[in-house]
Amino acid sequence: MLFHEVRLIAGKIYKGFIDSMAIIAGAMLVWLMVGIVISVVIRNMGGQPSVWFFMSTEYALFYLTLLGAPWLVREKGHVYIELITATMPKRILNVHSRVVSFLCVLICLVLAWKGYDLLQINIERNDYDVRARFVPKWILTIVFPIAFAAMAAEFAKFVVGKEIMHSGDAGVKE
Image (cartoon, one colour):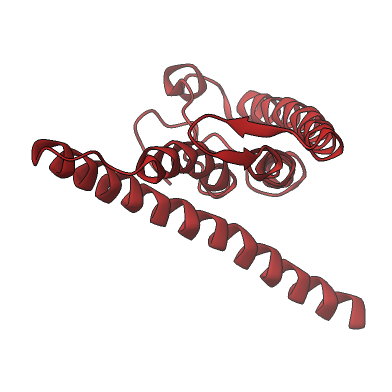
């Protein structure tokens, strides 16, 4: 009974973590719009926008992509060719979807591991992103192992869970 309760609590914490990453990604998307509009207005008024505008929108593009990806996997929002999966019999679709999900788990785990390796290198070497400002590179690379590990976990649910990633219906969202 205790194990079941701990599992439920851990599941809620994990779900909240993925949701939080998606919310942060959404906020960054809003910032991209606002930052670009402000930058254009400043330029049109003859001014020079702060380097911070450019850097923050550039970093936001990178972060929002990776932070939103695990939530997108959970919601089955990634792109795939439905015409192929729609023609498959249910049994074959079930196997196909689980194999594809398993391959996604493997790829995400490799990318998480390589991302962690890159993070360690950036920290050990004290690397900086040197352009207008000196920004420690680990600030960029820390998101790699986190996001790809979370995506691996989300894809793994489609490998071993009741639900599969592909609906089997072209143009129909479950």
